[in-house]
Length: 256
Image 1 (cartoon, rainbow, N blue to C red):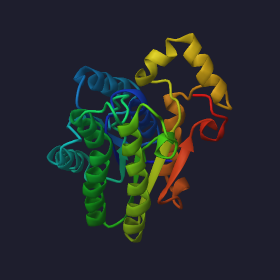
Image 2: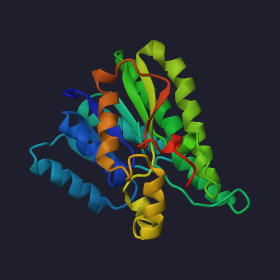
Image 3: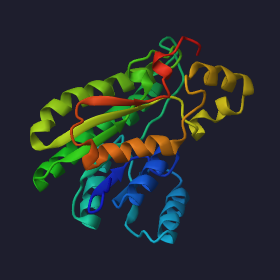
């Protein structure tokens, strides 16, 4: 598996799953554009980490993916730096942990704009660039088990991930004739900062680990490895579907 000669964009790429994806894609030979909206020092540290490994094919671009103009600038900066875009990873995501009765309009818009609007227009703008290049590409959206599995108390998040599911199913049909593949990656519980409160609570961790057939949370690198596979020629016949990386959680007995 190699991504030599490929150019990838990773939104929300300077922490958590996004950072792991950046490191894995770079390790497989891709040139990588790291989108970020905060913590520029984390992006600089990531660039320095890769430079220390002898990889200087990584740049950071500050862009708010909830804004179409920023997404367009992100694509333009990628083409300016590396000449093309072959892989688009719609990774940026947020949640408010609020239910249908308590979610405010502001919270709803925040979640939907970052999680779904950015994936829709990131897909659209990247696909137009790939079509102009003429040799296809891969668009991978980091979804969740909650694109299928309800999570009471986090309604807007689940809605956004359900939308991501249908974006991939539908756009995969539309873009397939152009050689562009659409795939979701649906993680279960992953050891990232977003789950820090759970990881700090032994009782919550015991309940979670018991509900996962493999008995543990995923590490970000395990999600990143799947993304790299899907972006490579090894995953060339996967389209308009979701690959769940959840340790069997979705099909386990209820317990969360």
